[in-house]
Image 1 (cartoon, rainbow, N blue to C red):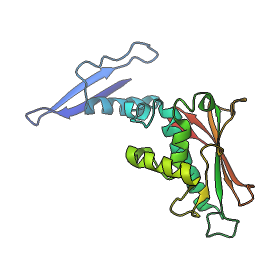
Image 2: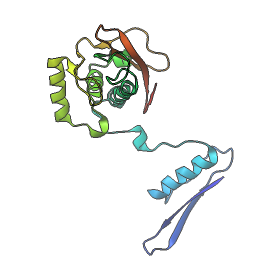
Image 3: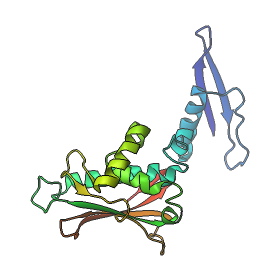
Length: 212
């Protein structure tokens, strides 16, 4: 099996680099002379021919909001998706169902055991308040956390205002068995005025992906 990458040299002429992989051989292809766009083309060509999916380093390593992306960015993204679930349900304040008046998140496995030290609780609360990693602002986040701690509620666009969320009681660290599928698990719940569960979503954080 062969793979090639083509680029333009400084004179505008086409220059090519190629490498070959013998079928069934464990020998890695030589990457000498391949860089930048050449490497991307090589990965795409090998993926197409072999069925192996290549991941960019940016798929694995990301700029995060804490010491562990799977313990901070993952829960924050999961919380944002849970808000989308509420918006699309009949409990978002405009549908026929009882409106959501409170939120709760339960951390399992390693998210529970190391969550406080890795700021997982803060990330989950911020995610439920509408923060996302791509637009994260540290100063705004700190102000939001202080306001949530004082008011014990969050207000999110497109959802009922002043949904109860007390970081001390509505973020639960469950030190029992982890959720099936992975050690990084969490469960989001939307509650009515009587604290009955209206919506429940379980997630596991698979580095660097999220699975519901």
